[in-house]
Image 1 (tube, one colour):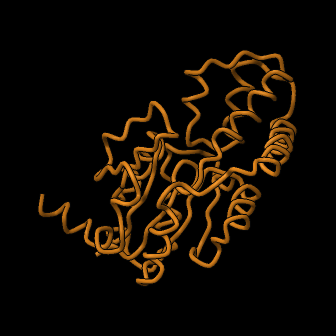
Image 2: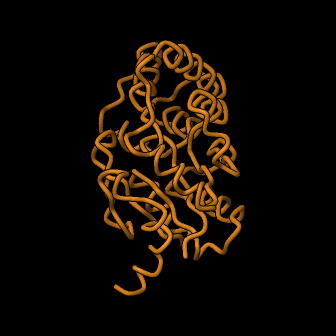
Length: 224
């Protein structure tokens, strides 16, 4: 039985991708670099630090990675604070509350910075539901490397065989499977061009999930 659900954040709990995109592309313009859609999409699931490390190598940027991160964070925070229509994704609060009421542990494992995670959790009052919040900025390698999910599973009240991950990105699913954890692929309308074929289960809306469905997913997989 599933006892711990590990959530990604962006594209799963909330869609801040338009805000991130705005911040990145405003900064790309400041840096006078042309980042293709293909290259930008390939960064899905990566931490800000790893994205700028890659961009620094590709475009031979002179700025320090830390300075680039701080500038992007500043643009993002300004945009985040003025975006009044930012909401949780449809159905996810009901799922989180249902899991919580039924004693399922929830852990966040997001590539976002700790600052961004705190801003989201404060805005939507999510702290009460999650026992741990793991940020990708604490790991030298981003998804698809499994380190963040391996660490999240180590914080679980149950063996990783009784954990499941909810992810919306190719890199996230690859990371979860590399960590040896069951994965639910969320086919989010906000996450384009993502390959969820490695996921153990795929859902198109969170109304497909509740405590009864999620808790038995491991046994359903064994019976297939």
